[in-house]
Structures are given as structure tokens and as C-alpha cells.
Image 1 (tube, rainbow, N blue to C red):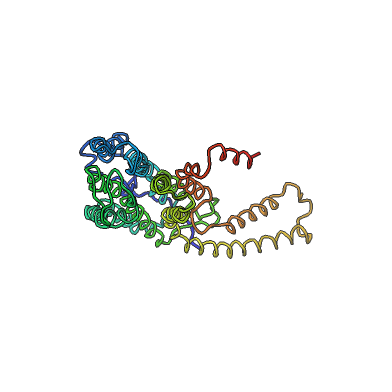
Image 2: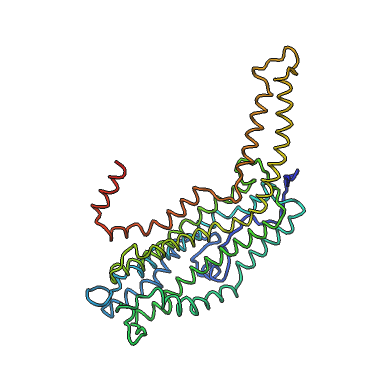
Length: 403
């Protein structure tokens, strides 16, 4: 079994902040244009600027072309639920998520050190994992590749084939001979607005990849895990708190799905139940995206648990035999009182320690985190239940279940 280091390490070279978001060409550009501070301040200004670039031109061009409002065969811009939700709600959430994740994750590196989880001999490897993550986060080449993926795959393949409502005329395009004939607003939409949104999205996936890679490198170190730690994950319980930082990101994904589903319901006559596979797939995708990186610690936690059960089992066996011999086989000294004896309390403490080891989890994942992430992902889709029944009928059913 791995034991904790006897000495608390102090490592002056370690950064006080470990951030997935304070770096990269876009971050540096935002700093130079005074749209972000050193710690991602000015989030409101960034949100307004991105909306002004992605959504406002679409509104103005749609007004000029006469496609902003109206009824008929054409889906108007202000009636396009998917486009408006994407740029007015999902995009701001992607930006706000940066600040939330930064503040939650900024001290994660020092937690590994302060809790003596990294043996002194392994500190250089830990330093190397940090440096590698920072280099990847700041990579110019990586963001150029992401832009190429957005235009080469995100727009040309995914958006055209799976997101665009190509079955009917819309404010941005009219189907013509199996192709889409774009309006002026549509050209801005496909050429700039959607790519900006997709870039911010895949940039988040890249950051989570960096986070998962960092955890994998740390998990390859022989960590000083304690089987009797009360967090029941050997001392790694602090990692589970980071999951809550991804709540805005989960809501953004729910909004991203709610938009196209609403369009298909309102304009193509489909039902919410027709998208149960897509909804389940989104939930599964988010769960894997956020929680799977923690599974890299499972082999070490499993080993610590097995070793702890064996060692504490031997200790318990020795103690209960001596307790039995002393108190039940007349081995106690004459006149020693049973009431208030420290032996009884020690037996209870040993039993509690053994139960902690026995209930160890194989990953720093909590039920509360699972429920919260699930709820955050599903919440934006809940209003679409009203497309299947009236609000009055829904309230009757809810009150009927409660009362």
C-alpha cells in the first residue's frame, strides 16, 4: 500500500494558478483588445462583442432583406429558435464557462502538493505534466487546426447535413436543386457566425482534452493515497468539486440541442419523442466528456483499496482477538472497569476505519455531481414538453403526482 509522505513539500517553482483557459492566441487577442483581463475579467464586454459580431448582423441583414419576421413558407430570422438560442444563450454560456472553470480549477495543482499526494521523488514528473499542459494550452498551431476543422468539417459536413433545416426555405437559405442558395444574412451566418460559435465550442473540447491528458499523466505517478481517507477516494475527493465548474457548459449543450429540436417541431411537424435518441446521446456524451477523465485513477484506487482491506483486515483480526482474550476470557487486570474503557472506543474506531476502506470508490465521482450535470443538460429541453401538452395539462399531471 502506498503511504503518505512524512514531510509536507513546498515547491516554489509550481504555479499558484493552474488554468485551462488563460492562454492561447484568442486569449492573447482578447487581452490586447481590452476585452479580457489577466484573470478573464470583463466577461460582460466579451459577451456583448461576440453577440454584436455573430447575432446582430444577422438581424440587420434579415431586416434589410425582409426576412426578419413574417409568416408563410419562409422561416423568419426571429422565428428561427435554433439560431437565436445559439447566439443569445449558448454562446454567452460558453464564454461565462471560461471564468467559472478558471476560478474552480485555479488551485487544483496546489491541492495535489498540499495534500502530499505527490511523493518528493515524483515532483519532477508532476512539474513536467504541468508544463506540458501549459504548452498545449498556449499552442498557436492547435488553434489554427481547430479553425481548419471548423471550416473543413464543422460547416461543410456537420452543419450542412445535420443541423441546417434544408427541407424548407429559411431566412438564410432556400433549397434549390439539392443545394442551398444563401441570402446575404445566410452568407454571414455560414461564413462567420456559425464558425465563431463552433470554434469556441471545439476549443472547449480541446481544453477538456488537455485536462484529461494532465490527469492521465498524474495518474501514472505512484500517488500517496490513503485508504482510510474520509473522502473515500484516497484523498482525491477535491477533484470531484471541479465537475460543478462544467455546469454552464452542460447547459450550453442542452440549449444547442433544444434549438434544432424546436425548429423541427415547429416547422416540420415532428414531436419531442422523435428525438429521444439524440437527447440520450447528448446526456451520455456530456457524462463521458466530464467524468471519464477521472477514471484514470481507478487502477491506483483499486490497488489501494485491496491493499487497505488486506492490511486493515489483519490489524482488525489481531485487535479483536486480543480484545476477546482480555475482556471475554478473563484476561483483564483485576479492578479494571469496563465502563469507559478506551478499548471499546478503539474497537469502534477500528471498525469505522475498516468500513471507510471497504466503501472506497474507484473514481472521484459523486452522485450529486452526476445528478447536477444531468439536470443542467436536460433543463433547456424541458420547455419543449409544452409542445406535447398544454401548460394546464402539464400542471394537472404534476400536481396529481405530488398530491
